[in-house]
Length: 402
Image (tube, rainbow, N blue to C red; front, side):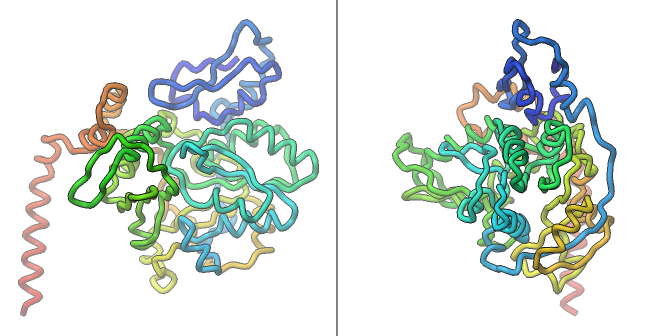
């Protein structure tokens, strides 16, 4: 029987709940907004299946990829609508054209992130693009298993923990399963996202200097993108469109993105991730190929470049059937591009303080802002370095005049 004692020992994949033959388990939200399995002990028969499919209890070995590529979808329109180089869309459309089914993360009617599937090309767009929230997996593993047993090809995309959960749940290899995970920085709290969204939805006037809060909720949200490329791929923006007003803030400006990048509200298991270092058993891993301009300047046009890690023979043979732009790279360069492949997220010291105030705050944006500021003593310790770099910059400017 699954018994979560330390929160860091559960990645929230949901495999245990979906495998339970008695249906005596469910995912329950904790005070931080993350889902954890809960067992009805009066119904449980102690079959042990929940423990057998747990990717935290039964971790795979670390791997190195068979091949590494910097890659682009050759359809520029698709690439501009994608978070990075448009490789997910390429994979998804190819699977659907073969009569298959694609699983991925999408927004629901309340703009929360859930796992779902599609078997038509039009449905792929909803899964395209990053969603910086832990998705609700629901019964996606069961549905994927049903499609696989019926002989249909399945592309299942998700975080490494979700792919590991799927593989453990299935308990056998399927020749028509293409498992694709993402290089994951960590999964933010759905509760924090919901609070931020509700607060943002009350914004009546938005500009860079002034915000007017209104209680009028008649203006419904029509579109959300965590990775809008209006300002370029490297300086992406969070965009929330409403019927009469819109929010458009770069990663340096948006408070939710800043808190996410500071690891302020990531899931506890992200600090001890059981599925980094390609342990998820995925066939392919995709991500942004950050720093590509330092490796191959000519290949970077600031419209997005994907990193592809080929982890299995099936992944390699499947990619060989597709047409896309690619340049082979080394795994060391991939790690330089994305250290989250192997490195756990380091939590700030004030994470617990943040969550202790979450349910009483009048403004989630202000709460995040208060907790991502450096403490005074740290700002003071950085002062000599700031002075040094300031002097160097001034000297360089003076020298450039001669």
